[in-house]
Structure formats: C-alpha cells, structure tokens
Image (tube, rainbow, N blue to C red; front, top):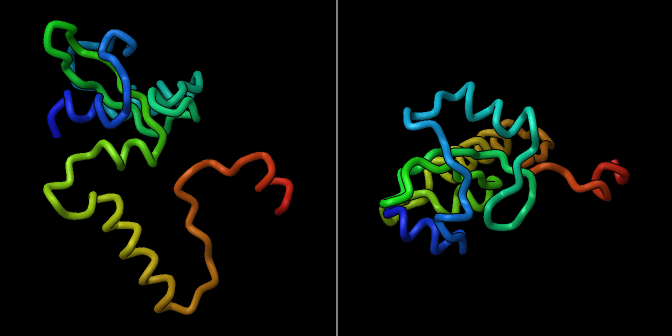
Length: 117
C-alpha cells in the first residue's frame, strides 16, 4: 500500500506523526514503544498495538502507531485478506475443529468487559 493511501485510510496528516529512527525499527524497539509508554493509535486514540516506521516523502521516517483494527485496515492486501486475517481464520477453524470453547481477543478488553468476567 502506498504511504498516501495508508495515511488517507487512517485520516492522519504526515506532520502529526512523530519522528522515527532512520534505520528500520527492530521488533524490540517497536514493542518497547507501545509497551513502555502507551502510545495512542494515530487514527482512533485507542492504545496502539502495532507501531511501524514509514518514510514520508519530504518528511523523513515517522512512527505510525496503530491499534490492531487500524493496522489491518491499512495493511496492503493485494486484493486478498490481510495475512493477519488469514492467520486468525486458520486459528479459528482449528479451534472449532478441536471442539474447544475459546474466545480470540484481537484488541484489549474494555474496563466493562473485564468486570463482566
């Protein structure tokens, strides 16, 4: 997906994004970014779970911190399901086939959901 398309989907201006290191982020850096100090999703403000670095033309490398739904929405799919969606569908099928009663969380629970148990 082109950077312009991604930013349009997320409804964010490049100048709003914080500067990032010029080298590609390692997984440890990305997880530290959302784990150490909760970063908000650039689109909805929910806690970010999927930080990435993009090179903005005339703006340099910038962090794009997204929640899981916005990461999936702004991931290049090539006309098919995003790899994460395919993996979730495979996992869901395996759980059903095994006859296991399970819930797959793809986003943090809300406070109300936590109190319901």
